[in-house]
Image (cartoon, rainbow, N blue to C red):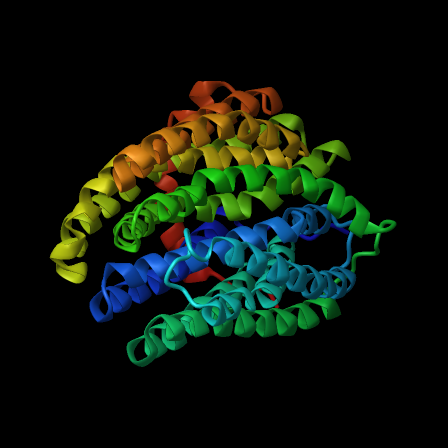
Length: 449
């Protein structure tokens, strides 16, 4: 018997709260490094985080999306998904460590100049536990265990904040990187505990061999995510090759602050992907109508449009107030770089929600297509603008790239979901009223047991 679906808005709200944790931790770390060493330290830390992040994305093979999709459709039991994913995390993480270290050694005199091999090795050692923790929260989200997902994210962020920021003061960059490893390890252990408990109450009977199916689905999402990472992170690496660590440090703070605008739509995206997959399966077996599924999806997208207003106000306040107050005069360019990035960031926030619907309905290849079209344009922008204008070129190129990716995602969304533009993008009074209902729901919220 299918379990009743939980309130999507409450899950999204909880996701928003916990996803602010990584940004808070990264922000505090950047402030500590900026105040103790200066912009160059921010630049080195941003480069290491980018290297680890891209390497993690490459070796993950898209299993996060594949796991969520299979578990959401109740074709993979929690127990087997847990065991298989953690073994995969160890194997893939070790492969990523070796590959990432090779890339570092090849570029240590250019992109990664001034960073020691030992510090890079420490950062890359976080890959196995990072993958395990990502796979764990994919399973928890697929099961709509929003509290477990929150626990995972908060354990990761809190450890990074306490260990990373605490050790960065006496040990500078090395201390911050130790925080990366500690946060990943703690989150992986918390994930193992939560999944062991969840497996005891899971009633799903595996439908065949789910790992190959998860890989087939995940590889399409993997290709799309790799291409999207060129939009998100290659600007930092290319800037590191053409400009100094100070420029990277100033620009990385602008990226961190403007990415706060993604917290609200990304919270919605996080819970919408498994819900879209679940609704699509329910439509296929006749539990609900296609119109009901479309209506739920359209409502979620309208909320992503509504959320751009508070996101804009928050980021604007941070750029105008937080930068001069917390970072100091050496980061004054960060404010204007942030305003250049902001339009593209806001558009891509809506695009992220659209992409979750596309993938959830079983068409991750369309997200891959949008990335494949956008990447040549993005690289042309980066290699034209960054050598000429340094961090300013990176900001202009990234903002244009974000907007283009959002537009392409909209085109493919229209092919997957027969929903009118007015229904999908024009908020209604009832949508605004939902936020008052969330307060009522918070008072009566009962976690699953």
